Image (tube, rainbow, N blue to C red; front, top):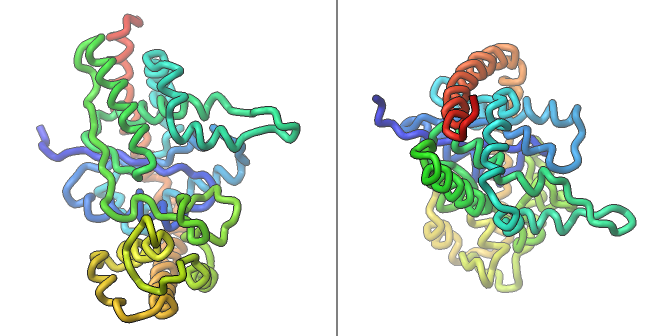
Length: 335
């Protein structure tokens, strides 16, 4: 039996993929793919918990696959698949939902944040049920494959803890069924902040896109966003998230692009102003996006071949997932 540990991770195909998604969910896998079994999926079922457009969703699913590969993921080492093509995800989600309380789900920070922004034009609150039970589907994604680690951003840590609690609860009631995984969160880059408002996360859904860098946007436009990023009046390149959140965020982006340590970057720009620092960062970002987009375009032309690999993976993951869901059904008393 292999002693190699397994990592699972997923990206929602909502809107366009951001630089924050890349640093938090994709870049860490590039080095890990040499040492671990990695299952990376497109979390399309999670994308319909709020308003969506079917045509855009279909295109975004394809783009997430292309993004994984264009970023440096080796499809011979990382198994890519699409969540909705494995029915056991929703089957297990229902079982886990029945072992979860309303209170646990309502306490999820992301549910509270997202639901507070949803209301009809007349002011009536409109909260899709899918948004509330999102964490149990996420728990199913994780537990279905007996993963050892979940590669995720720091904002998902609470959901991972819930998945662990559900797994332990199920194991205690029915006997050992699920592996209880640990979160795998990168030290830097797990939470890239908005360029205009560094108190909030850089997100696909932020209303003002000037604070968000998208991987497929014009490199020139993205470089200008860096130059316009909010800093402060101190004009000192220093990493201090509490007092200098804007420049600290830019230093984090610089570190993720170059793999340089934070302290080395601060030392490098000790006697330089924000303008010089931003200019250098803008050049680095522009070069990164040009290289990424060149790879993306190459992979786009090769997508029919990529799709065949996905079909093979879908068959394999359906077989793995079916064994687990049958074990679960037997444990709870189903025929």
